[in-house]
Length: 563
Image (cartoon, rainbow, N blue to C red):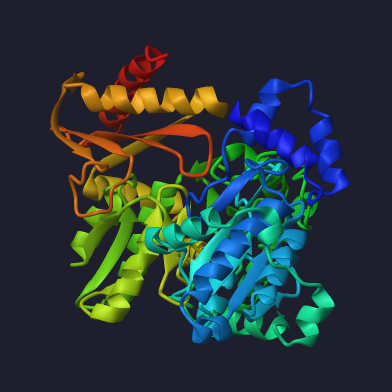
């Protein structure tokens, strides 16, 4: 078997160190584990690598990181000396080996004659995007696995616009990786040599100060209740300093930080799965919120590009908001605020993903603003901002997707939880001064635009068998769609893989019904999951929730029958 040959190759190759070989020897009697580590190579998914940390071709380790970086280096060299001189900026988060992987990437690039800017300490992912634009580098790298569990890490690649690479650059990198004959062909030098040559440059406070000032410049209102009580948790990630700093400098006086989750912890001891999209991540924040009677709880994920919130209702209970609801509230707040100032661009647009809800579209339409859709992922959302820079035909106002990622403005070309945390706090403080909670505002939006409801179902299917079953599920739905669910009749099917829209091909299926309810199915690009996105719209909440229930039962029943 091919994976056994790869496993034995690593054991017998003197290039790999003793620590790696000892780790591999510890699994010699576990064929399943050997297969999972070697049956494939970590491939570029959502703009880079992501996987479990460990020895093997299907793992994040210093060898797979250096291999990917050599592929990136060869790609940059193909653009000529100017690209090499512009260089690459590298950031990293709190995870195990993040700092080490960042340094390895730096030393591989430097060995290839490419200038490197390495952050002096951990930073939020959006600051890496800002730095790529600010320093005019050809590329950027951030070492992070975002909100994945502790045993994961990742490697995200950005291009000169400050957004994650698209397929054209990813393909060049992949082809260059494939052309590397062996790990021993990877170029790498010692850190001292890299620094002495001027190729490795350490960056710090200046870039951060600029970034924070730019973020504060995106605020929309100062007529707000700055006494609002807010609990913030960075979930032991990179958001602690920048988010707290922005809120403090914006004048918020009552910000309490969850002490157990304040400082970096690569094991995420208090949370396990550090994803603010999961209400369980708010356990400690809610306890602190109750103690101080907080109005709002905010949580950012470990690399601080995603943010979610929980709001105290009029009875003192804490109610979580999902990504669609937060996105719709932000669209309303941004456009309402700019409309009051007569500051909405004539050609302004809201950009959202194809699996994000439609309440924001109705809100934007009220303000005369167009909504356009892209494939899932902020590399596609922010690529629209890049396009508009060139064409000048439209103005990017706000982009978001249901998985709690948002960006306002264009100083950053990725989702940004520093900007979004500031806007969520400001929005809550604005409405509080006017006697409303965010829940009151959301209910008003439902009454005005209709009750848009949603549910995401994620089914974890790990390993080779899991990937094969995901393939069978997608094939089955492609061959035969569900024609009706309850009172809803299917009126449109979109297969994004077949080019049914003007978006690039993607393995996503979407089914739209005559009631304006719809669902979509797609394999995750970063995790071993298949995701089902369910949406409904009705004149009252009960009917909308009933539609969600009917779709979920029907679709999951169909999936369960596919073994």
